[in-house]
Amino acid sequence: MSGAARIERLVTSGQFTLDGGTWDVDNNVWIVGDDDEVIVIDAAHDADAIAEAVGDRRLTAIVCTHAHNDHIDAAPALADRTGATIWLHPDDLSLWKQTHPDRDPDAHLVDGQIIEAAGADLTVLHTPGHAPGAVCLHDPGLGVVFTGDTLFQGGPGATGRSYSHFPTIIDSIRTRLLTLPPETKVLTGHGDATTIGTETPHLQEWIDRGH
Image (cartoon, rainbow, N blue to C red):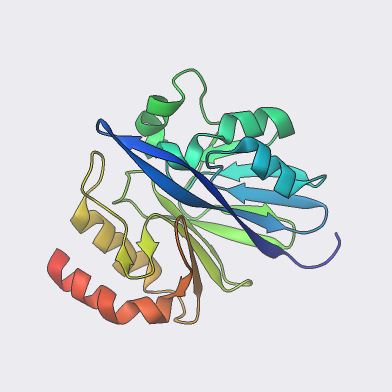
């Protein structure tokens, strides 16, 4: 292994489609690892761009924070190209099938399991609400949590569409994310990073509203 894990951010653009609507979106694709081996969190929109960012490193896993199309649309093509394993929580299989009816994920994420990348150990936190199988990935060593669309700068992810539920996402954030150290960096599925400590005060207002 050559050095400690580092985190790279790639922004890809495409469309999010659900419930008959379509929106233009920019997605964060996170690449975690070292000079030899990496994992990708959320293979969004552009398999070519992600493969280029990975370069000649070995891509071992594509971890899906949830199965909305804008987070998984490039996953099969990237996996076919690299041999990486696609990981998804089984509660999101029905959402996955809307985008990829003929291709299943390769492996099921389980709450509490650890996904290893070079120099990184990402613990899977099942955080339903934005989607039934939504997960966050916490690495205490790197001091980060990858939250997908569960928590953003400024509040929780959207819960206005199919498969989502506001009290559930609030409960997930309260029990799984606000318990993390306040200095933990929150790396999101869209937009800018924040920290648990920064988000805690106004999340308390959402929690009060959700209960």
